[in-house]
Amino acid sequence: MANLSSTCDDLRAEYRNILPGISAEQTKQIEAAIKAGNFLEAASVVQTFKNLSGVEFNIAITGEPGSGKSSLVNAIRGLGDEDEGAAETGVVEMTKEPVAYHHPTCPMVTFWDLPAIGTPDFRPDAYLKQVKCSHYDVFIIIASERSRFCHTKLAQEIQKMGKKFFFVRSRVDLDLYNEKHKKSFNEERTLEKIRNNCVYNLSREGMSSPQVFLVSSREFQKYDSPQLQKTLLKEFYNHKTEMFAATEGPRGNR
Ligand SMILES: Nc1nc2c(ncn2[C@@H]2O[C@H](COP(=O)(O)OP(=O)(O)OP(=O)(O)O)[C@@H](O)[C@H]2O)c(=O)[nH]1
Ligand SMILES: [Mg+2]
Image (cartoon, rainbow, N blue to C red; front, side, top):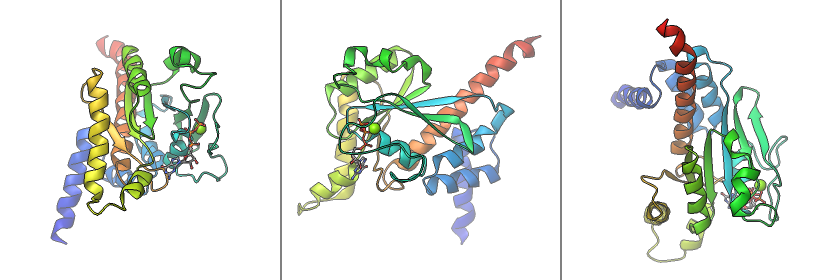
């Protein structure tokens, strides 16, 4: 019991750090939503911040064919793959053009399920132009296997445009399952190995401190999903704050 209030203080301190200005009540709402794996509910709290209801935030999800882009969109929107309004997922190529997904309680945040990079219709050299990359505020690059050159190249191109990317390593539930038969199996160590490998591959190509998240869309509450959601919230918050400064700045100077 004694720890309860200190836990609340820690929680507020953590959120005050990443989302300055939010109240204790809002902190609780955000944390509960993130724990339930409901990013959009958490984002709808941030949405009201600074009264900038018209600020859109566009998150693009990109990666190779079958890497789990649509599954992640569904998981992050709190939907099962067969729920109404869910993105289509499957074992053959599914997503053939950018598709927007939003939510009634948080209409300003849009997830864009992009077609896969590296298919005959979307070759790497023309891909970002084809998917209208300038439209998106941040990118999630998703990879379901060992990092390939294609991912790092994509990350470089996104950085060159002055945009941020987050790297999601998907389907870690399957990686753990595949390693479990080994006598020396240790879940934490396996996850750390995967994480370090992703960071190493991105850093080797010149990206400093890349943000890597290990996620399973099947077990969305586990692994790095809470950190991914908090990072997206922070980006949304910063985006709104920048817009606020841009609209208030000149008037403030008068
Ligand atoms: N076990 C497990 N399977 C996953 C996960 N994410 C995706 N899958 C499965 O992987 C397959 C491909 O997932 P999609 O979400 O359709 O992949 P995508 O990247 O959208 O595919 P395209 O749009 O065709 O490029 C499906 O059978 C999913 O059920 C995960 O985290 N864990
Ligand atoms: Mg898809």
